[in-house]
Length: 116
Image (cartoon, rainbow, N blue to C red; front, side):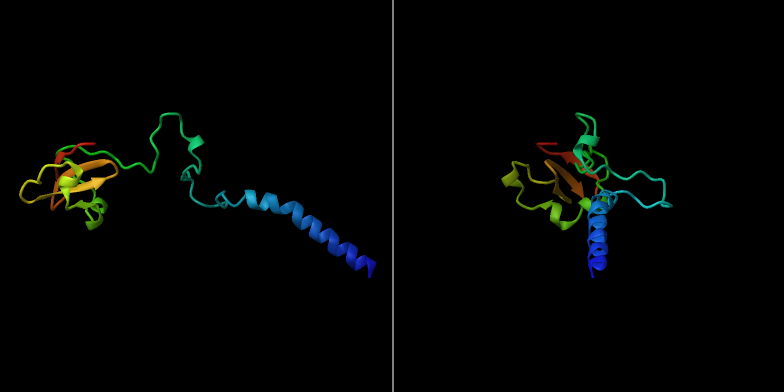
C-alpha cells in the first residue's frame, strides 16, 4: 500500500514539475509547419515608434479603399456630427479608425476628411 502511495505522489510531483514547461510551449508553432514568421504577441517586440500591425492603413485621394472597409458598418450617414461637408453626389463618407474618406460606390477615394 505504501508503494502505491509513493508512486502516485511521485507521478503527481513529476506532472507538476513539467506543467510550466508544457504551458510555455503552447505559443510556439509545431515542428514541420511553414517557415512563415508568426506575429509577435507583445508590443515590446516592435521597435519604439513602430506602428501597430492592427492600426488601419491610411489612404489618399485616388486610392481605392479595400472592400472590407466599404461595408455598411463604416458608412457615416450623419456626416454633420463629424464636422464633415455634405458628400458629393454619388459619394458617401466612410470612417476608418480616426480617418474619414469620401468614396464612390466602387471605393475610389474622392477626398480625405478632417483627421485624415
